[in-house]
Length: 364
Image 1 (cartoon, rainbow, N blue to C red):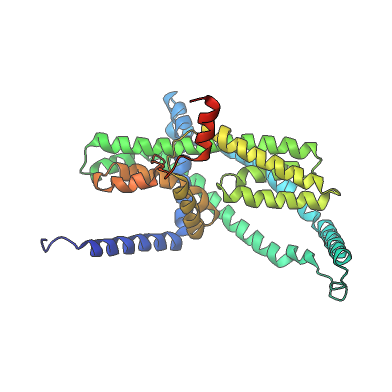
Image 2 (image 1 turned 60 degrees about the horizontal axis):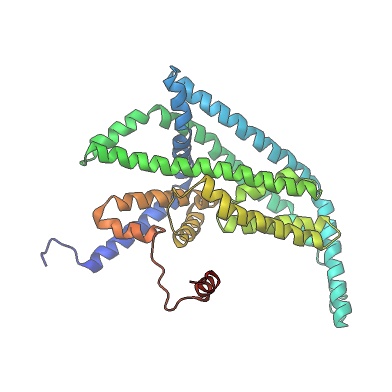
């Protein structure tokens, strides 16, 4: 082995150190990077519309500004509905806390009657209303204000990225030693992944909100718009978001209803909506642009959540898809791109019983 080549152990160590350093820098610079990455994603998503206006002889700045205004109006309307209903819900917290204490007391009484014990009668009354303490509320408002500050920077990033898009493309061409066609193809593929993912998820979110809203209105939930949007937005975080949102909504239905049947029915309906979204809506609307296997998606959610919080849970999924595209285009790194992909053989030791039953029923 020549002296100028690194030993495989050294190469692995340097790689792990580099990855750790990058992840640490991403966490430290989250306040700068999170709105920038959101801005890049929205710039890719809004580019077709702004480009359509520009092709109709709109000045580029006016085309971008018009696109941002229209999107901001739609987003502002949704945000207003959320805030309005959230304020009303916060006003009902004392009443909800009272009902929670009543149901908790009834539950303890039933336990005492069934077991013939008096274990809970001498203990202090557990005031579960403390869950909604003003201290937690202040922390929530502080984090919300910080998030709003980041959201206010995103439109500026979107405008500048779209306005200087030719400048950035020219920079990539000058900085790369590869052929210009390969660079443009890589940029186009990444743009298609981001655009398809964002636009598709917006459509999926809208459809899930409609289905959940119709059900919540039919069963008479007071803040059906808030909970429908909450379910739909949390659905953007695969696997984890839908569990958290469903538990909270079912808990609210349990507190505001006098029957155990309604929370169970809500659980079944939300589970049905999730099955419909996963197996029919998302494959048809989003397609398979982000061709990443489930294990990679789960790891991306956990790593993204640990580094950038909720934004990381959403952003790291398309970022993983872009990483796969990049790895697939580098011959020496193609095995790692394959590791992230969803095309892999499933080899079983024996033929499973499901296939045997299918063969038996089909007569083959």
